[in-house]
Image (tube, rainbow, N blue to C red; front, side, top):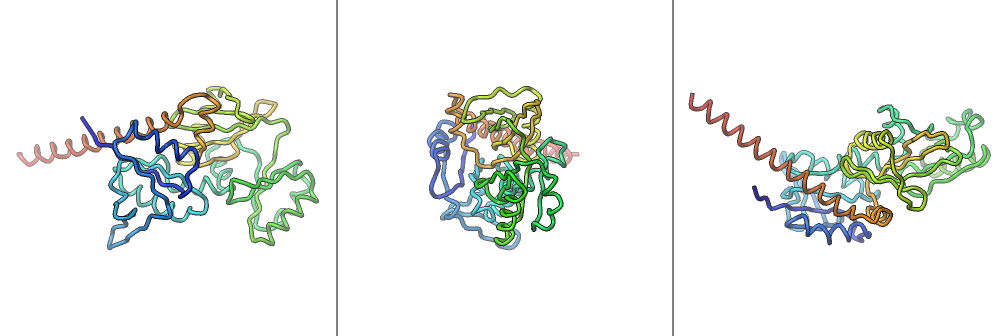
Length: 299
């Protein structure tokens, strides 16, 4: 059965290296490819329908949507993904909830704890006063994580420095997120593509995950409602494997360089295969429904 396969990539107006490579290489896997800047999309809501448009193109008329989500555009992505999810024909590699998990640093440990996945001890508060008694018992150094950003993690080595930074965050109206650290832990970045996982440690050296570590990573990605992301973890010197975060916009090209493997191609092949399976299942469901209706209609 022959299908004409369309891919729409939605991302920032200024593309990064991964987005440029995705567009260029997608031509090998899809019949029609369109890169759409998020700022050029508008949504029309009429009666019981909400339709996103790029110029005069209805974005619901595609097979695959690949969002490349930036924090500043999260509200529109939230709306768009909810609209796309209602359209059962379109393949999207993650849910609208995943966007929030990807950019809220406290939701991550909360979801991991709920799923029974090991993560560093994390504290969350809107004021220093609420955490005052904990500051003397916390093991330093500790991380202060900006709750709505992937950048700007601060390492604090004492109670007094923690108080100063927390006071500043409170004045700025920012929630306070503290996370315990592990001395000599190895930082790991792990690209998840469906059921596959590719890990690098430190500055980009490939790291071979054990079967149990891979299972933890895949379980974490499913907990975050995504099949395409970067999971961040640490491996402690006493062999604890802890998940510390998730990035919904992985820099796939960086993993390609580390592994010397065409992981962008693998990503596109995965999306194509999943979309084709979805189309074939829809066609089969329609055929079975037609057959049942016809059979019962003849009786």
